[in-house]
Image (cartoon, rainbow, N blue to C red):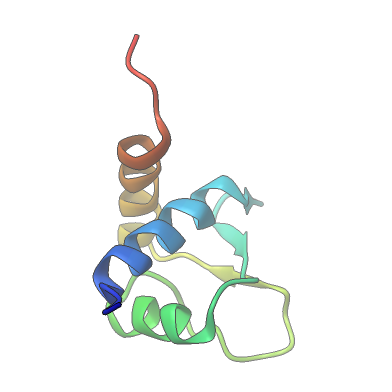
Length: 76
């Protein structure tokens, strides 16, 4: 099976929204390749380091909320 990395990235970004804390930080316990792609897209700050969380950019915060609602929200 071929994996659609864009869909993986969207799901990871949505799940980062689920783990938000301190306003713009999220736990970074996701696939490193996906985290690196999100960093390359400018949605999160550099995920490399000892910290267990990552900083989302302003665009990343907005997009993570949008993806979270799109993928996991219920109507009504």
